[in-house]
Length: 291
Image (cartoon, rainbow, N blue to C red):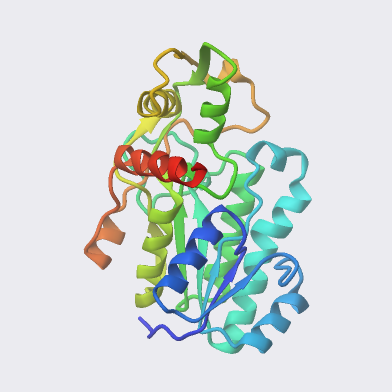
């Protein structure tokens, strides 16, 4: 492992994860360069290299991505330019300047046919354009930066600074008495600040390789929705299960994508709190932000 060197450059700093990550880095007194699309276009090698030359980052954290899973099916060129070419450009610039790259990936690189939590070394087999573009991004980062990268796979992300499933459920609950939610996809909701805290721990260690990082436990979207309504005190709204096939979304999704976090726990000596506790914290912070 190499020693972390400041400043840290965050690409995608104004997104849901990026916003929390920048805040937590700055709270810890870490010199942070926060760049979003108007300051660094990861799709363009010249834009990336210009930023690296100007700021001379020691650690680069790529949280920029096209995460519209269904939209990627009809925007494949854009998906690959952001999710694959972008990481390639960041890895190439990191190689040229000696920076360590932390790259965020996804459970969608798996096909969901397993029935026990996915390990980092399990074979990947993405089902749709989003997963394939992210898998290609992983491959390019590993190929270009074999010893100076850390790939972090996560899933079902939500937080205060972007569109997410929790907000969608709460919004629908204001309009409907009955919500139908998919009950045949299994994973783990992950709270953005918890993931951001874990990313900072990994940045301090700069461990090469791939890590799975999610909140603890597992659930379905249906069970997640039920818990959201319960904790929000919306007992008048009923949740009914439905199948993925009934929902009829354009992009295929892994039926089971729970990920094993033991490699991260062994390295850092810490595990993320349960998804239920994280959700309760989110709802409390959301309420406080609305006051």
